[in-house]
Image 1 (cartoon, one colour):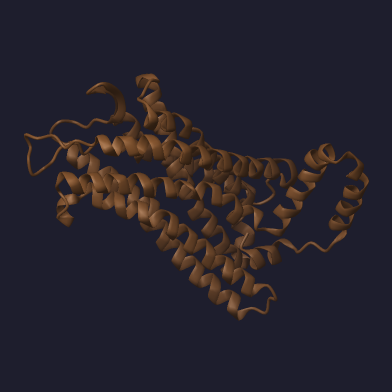
Image 2 (cartoon, helix red, strand yellow):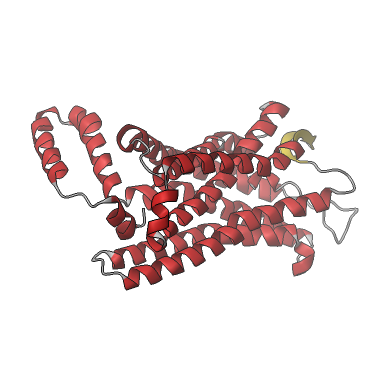
Length: 350
């Protein structure tokens, strides 16, 4: 990730001459803090609203609700570490060795758990639409809780190597929080971790999503549902958005980690690749802000609950004379026909 960009510090074509990357550091100090701040603000608001609505209004009545809640928590965990990395990009690491390891572990736990819950949300939709009868038995809150505990355990295990190898060291005139591997196996450890990240974060999720959504589309095209075309469009949006946000970062990270395989093992190419990793990683982080829109607020029930929350807790204070009008409108909205759970799953994929 961004804090890993100090790993490649030497020009492989000239071991005696270090590869100077002052311009890369300067770019990161100007580019990353404002973008991290935007991701923090929008991601915090969106995911906090998801958590609030799921707990206060939906009350976790299905496996989907459990996964959505955990996905929002994963994004919040990921996002809450950003202020520290933003400060680090602009200055140096001033938070000590323990915080370096803890925040690195939090960052990667949020990253891995977010990817895993996206996978299980995809599988949840697949079961609800393609295997509807079997789904009645398996898609329960209890199963959702058990699988969520398993996902968090795997995510923590996957993030442990990052936390273990990260430490604080003085480089030139500033403190850094970067990965420091064993002397003789450092390259292999670094390559193993990057490959694991790419496989778990892009290859496996994308493969599962393609398989599940192809089967979902086939099922929707066979059934006579008025909203099936909307569901098909939503499915393509989910796949395309996921690929657009995460593929560039994984590709840049792969090339940056294996420069010899792409004949890019010189100082200038290393600096360009490091810049590409920084830009594409920040772009991928925006997916945390998009998740609440794709997986929650695009749903009819979520929009209804969000409207209820806004009218009861925000609009009332902004426009007190309008309170009666808001109440009447809310009652009319509540009296409208609400699709059944099965129809909801088919029509919007949630």
